[in-house]
Length: 176
Image 1 (cartoon, rainbow, N blue to C red):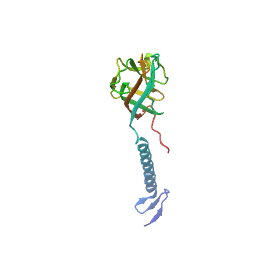
Image 2: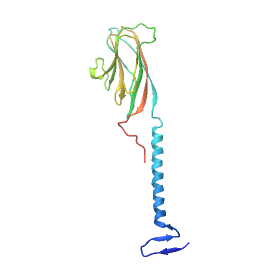
Image 3: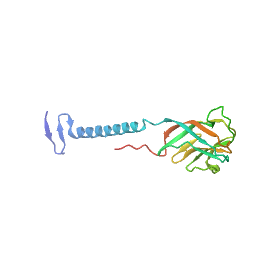
Image 4: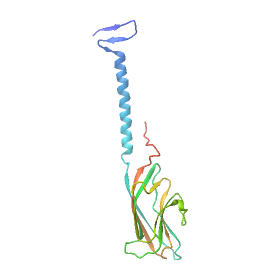
């Protein structure tokens, strides 16, 4: 191996240039950083889609006032794609009266504005199925069921399923 210094200021180590070796090392370090960051993104997304059971129950009052059942809502930077909602008595054979509204709102209301009503059940019990993207709940909203003119002093129950996903409006963030 010969070491020669030329007038141009470059250092030659045999057939390899020191500048080329340093450049290759810098490129490999940059590639390693990118791969490491991609792995951190993958770890952050490993819980991307999570199935959520929707459950709620409440008893109507003696006057038969509207009944609001809160099924909750997604966490910050998450959304729910609601797949199914079943509204009725505590069992399928329970006799219950009334109509129900499926409401997506940040505020609990027994008489919600029409813009917050996502669906309605004309009779109870009722099962509603939703396609992907059809019924979305984003943070800070909750999914409420409002039973209109319920049977007095009667237990009502709600069940269902949703898929909890990262909200694409917020980029996935990972520590550097």
